[in-house]
Length: 162
Image 1 (tube, rainbow, N blue to C red):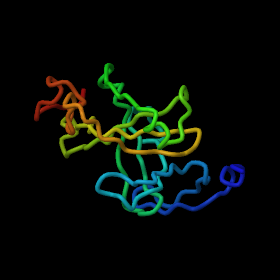
Image 2 (cartoon, one colour; image 1 turned 135 degrees about the vertical axis):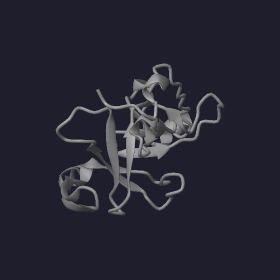
Image 3 (cartoon, rainbow, N blue to C red; image 1 turned 90 degrees about the horizontal axis):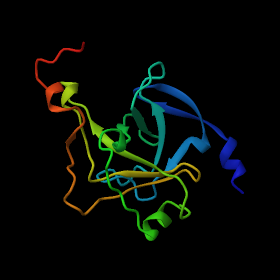
């Protein structure tokens, strides 16, 4: 039954990346949307820069050409990041108990990119096998919605890239 979804090609119009040819199976369904963007229920992950290895990715809306979020894997910056998914949470993204899933945080990159922060309170969980995602809000006070990704010594206003 899933085969039709797999191979359908479609055009995706985006403000930042122009028109993209994508396959339907690349789309991740967020049935609840994202916080503050409840109507945005379909996204596609794109490389931050196709020519450069980067810890960042774009999460481009398949519905609104202008809407794209920068996301990253929080474990790259906070190795002991704790995300406990309850069984009911896993059901929301159709995860089988031991299935692998992706965890992503939305990144805010200000003009001074060294000040970039990640929202560790509201991680995005993606089930890549089923193409489903959900944003969760962690209730523990352990994390910050604006967690600096770069260490303090790299965040000086006068920092110049070496």
